[in-house]
Amino acid sequence: MQRAKILVACQDRSARQRLAETFRFRYQTVAVDDGWLALHLVNTTAFEAMVIAERLDSLSGLDVAVSVRESGRNAHVPIMLVARAITPVIREMIERGVVDRCVAEGVETGAFLFEFNSMCGERAERAWAALDADVSRVLGTARRTYSHVFAASTADVPFDAKLLDEVARQLVGAIVDGRISAVMQALQGHDDYTFVHSLSVAAVLAFFGRQIGIREGDLCLMAQAGFAHDFGKRVMPHAVLYKPGPLDTAQMVVIRRHAAAAGQILRCSPGIPAEVINVAERHHERLDGTGYPNGLVGAQIDDLSAVAAIGDVFSALVDNRCYKPGYAPEEALRMLGDMAGPHLEPNYVKTFTQVMHDTGFASWVAPPREA
Ligand SMILES: [Fe+2]
Ligand SMILES: [Fe+2]
Image (cartoon, rainbow, N blue to C red; front, side):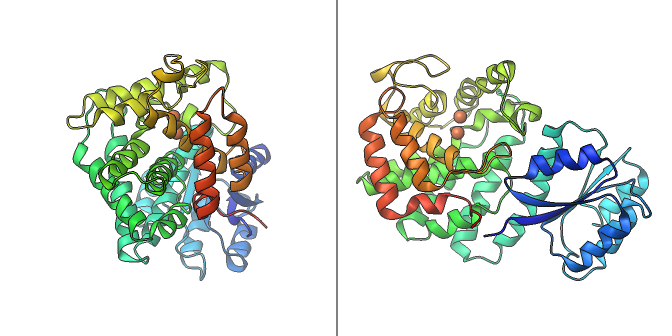
């Protein structure tokens, strides 16, 4: 499968290269510095999204955007404008839907990616309307809940626990009635990594639970725990959360705070089960005490948190991130096996690997890969 193409029209050569690098595992970047050349490509090539600088050779970025909206195959493609400042003219262009988003020139990459991903995510969400009604409902409920939780940026703002319960019920319903593969496949088209990862982990845990005979009420608990495990990321700065590369030591310290922050968010939200809070706080703990935030050892880590750690690592391995391509499902399962023992509970890893392998579920969680 070919990666979808994005058009980057920008005069600054190093900015073009930086964007191509940033997108390399998710999109194929077609980069130009000239407005007319951009328009030629718009008329000959299908794009998934466009990043257009206001200042271009021969034709302004706004002129290009207006022409895109009048083009055939690319008329509805999301457009992000990169401008010196958001002027009244640009604001009007956004209101008219000519441009979807505008960011300032020189914006830090994490903030840029946050805006770009939410712009493309909205496009994916519109496409859900055409899916089977039950599949579309699960995805819509999950997205609304995630947006509700992430609308705040501190750990002391509660959220409505009933929404989390509803996500879990619908997700378990999709597992029971056999629609979960369609849910997972549609989910892979979304660009918000933390959202995709959260719902993937929820599905992985509940699916695994069902395969090993856990009763339906507890499957909902597993799905809730999976969906909420990274809610603490709402307090993370975008520069860290969306950094297109490995984190440095100081950034690692910051990102590791998400486990404790998730605990705080869940504790201040009335009606969240204790098991769900445990998973949020402990999914990065490791059997040998090398995990965080508390360096718990062996039996100090409860069973659900130990299983959640496996689902979390598996989902992270198969996902494309801006700094790494996703591993093939079978490779990810093999790597999971290597982590059994010192880090992950070996018996659970063995059963998990068997279930994911035998049911084919592993491939549903993985994003499409290039042939
Ligand atoms: Fe996490
Ligand atoms: Fe996670």
